[in-house]
Amino acid sequence: MAQRYMLGANWKATARIGASACDQCSFCTEFCPRYLLGHPIEPHKAMRSLGYSMVGEANVIGTLFCCECNLCTMMACPEDLDPSKVCVQNKRRLMSEGRKWEVEAVATRPELHLDNRRVPIGRLIRKLGLADFKNKGPLLEASLMAKRVKLPLKQHVGAPAGAVVKVGDAVKCGDVIAKPAENQLGAVIHASISGRVKEVSDAIVIEA
Image (cartoon, rainbow, N blue to C red; front, side):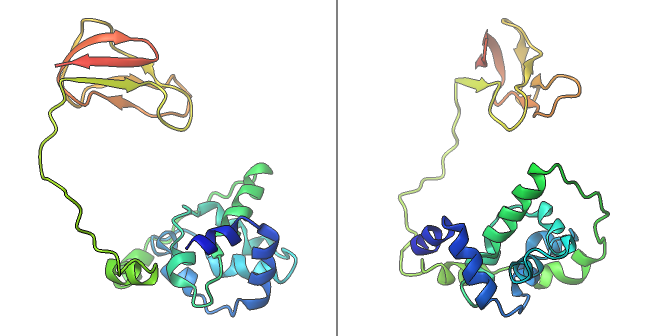
């Protein structure tokens, strides 16, 4: 895996090897969880574009839907190529150009294929070369009952959330305590424990 990641850092080498060695078996697409959910991403077409100087945007526009899970690279490809890196490079190029593709997902695809193409965890562990390592950590099943939590208002991609509570307010676990401003991309933050708000700054402190 370390060698794979070291090679992936060199885009020119990745592209050259991919263009010469990809046999278009399409396993990367058949295993792709986004493709199986109905999204129009086909990693094997992104690999095909390497050999044709990016001819035909139809081969790469679907990479905008790549979630970068790396399953195509680490599990699917029998040639040990890097379809994930190719998809990511194409996706970043398209995003830098402001390209978007609004398309309806294929609603029937999950019903036809998803349940039959899930990757077994055992096979994935063996493919990654991790089967010889024993997963027997000193783990204990115990409930964590925190008496005090500090929830940063900026813990996600996008704009920071704005507090909707003030010092002294009583909150219950699951209550909304911060949300992004109108027309801003961000995330809503919920209270993780029940208690009283003790501090509101760049983070919200709650004590039980």
